[in-house]
Length: 105
Image (cartoon, rainbow, N blue to C red; front, top):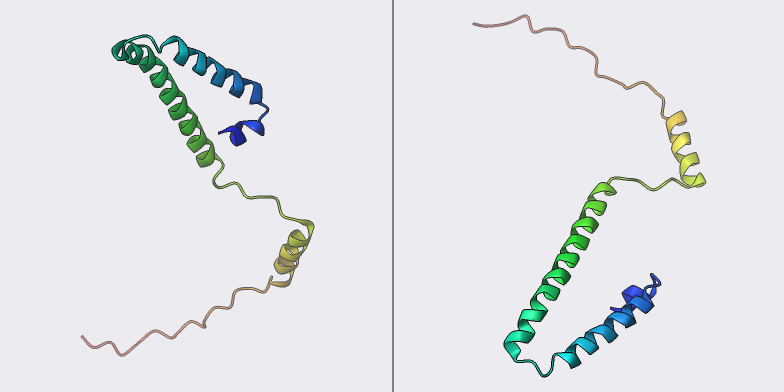
């Protein structure tokens, strides 16, 4: 998880979050397990909701950018232009056939 956050300059937030979680765990160690679970459920729910929202946004962004093509380099553009200019011959079609006159009914 740290590698994901270090590239985005969120390292202080990451370490503060770890320290807060450690402090909460120390403060809750004397409480009975049922009370601990009651205090942890809203936090777990918010965490799961944040992860779900992040994934939905990522999927929407990927869907929006799916068909965008990258710009062509200068070499690719020149090759494409030369293909367009050199292949301007008209489409050759087969000569039309004479209609069949000997129709037997």
